[in-house]
Image 1: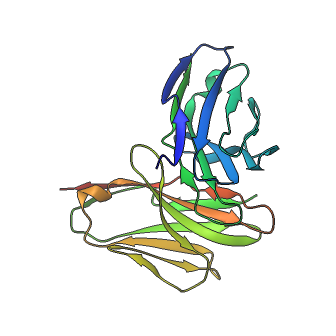
Image 2: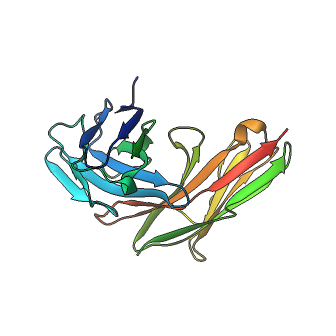
Length: 112
Length: 112
């Protein structure tokens, strides 16, 4: 019973590099979302999706892209990493119109 | 803009003490308030509250919502070292825009 799986767990990038954070869930949840967590800022919503082929912006979307080609997967792309994107990233999923969200274990990302 | 404020920011108590964590909020079209516990990794769900004045209870933890005064409290009685964590409060707005807004959290430390 995997739940929400995020990879990698840790990553160090140089400014300007690109990378994709992976998120997969096996609970057949329609709703998936990405958050970033910074000290003193709480969890802030980056992007979310209510189903395959549908995505929308959250509170802090700039510098990030997402796509949702399947129900199970919701990758987050950094096209040109910046030091301000150093953070812990959490993916979460739930059924549409219900709570709570179930969170993955996070990806700790450092941009040098 | 939706807003969630938690207090205190941090709290240090001795094992066996009782603690009360606070969460006040301002949100358009309130739907629910959720409490999560975050240790080293993923936030884990504790309670969801939708109705005023109805206490939710799980073992030594309990929570109540006041929709008139726009706040919730989380109580932990007979604290144990395993209760040490960051406690997050989040508020969900409804009516087709079901996003969660998180507070910055309360860091609780239990001293043996």
